[in-house]
Length: 126
Image (cartoon, rainbow, N blue to C red; front, side, top):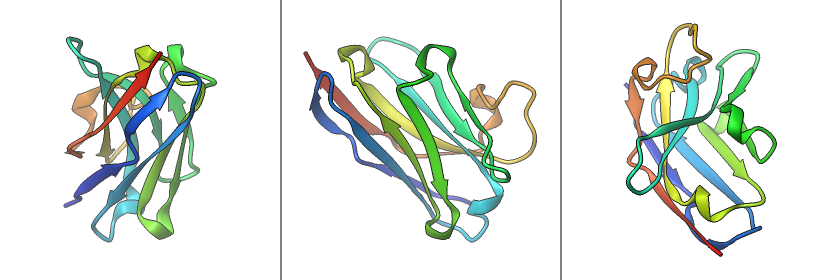
């Protein structure tokens, strides 16, 4: 069982940066692939990035390469999402999620994740 709590969201001006955190409970955090998804108003939730539990291999949505950086600190049971050069279209609720096992999609599918946090709101003003 893993419980996830996101933090670090807020109101930021376009061009700014944020680092979102996802704190996990449970002793097996290091065995889970961690992912970030986001849901903008009126849109479906979409994949942003994921990082595997071993070798720390990262995956990104094609549209977000370069501005987003996912990382994790297994000693702190925490995953991070750094977002630079924020745009108004980045406004969304950002969710972290935990998956166990292998993936054929690069962990881009929601069904691959067993645990989800409640989300943290990011609002980017123009």
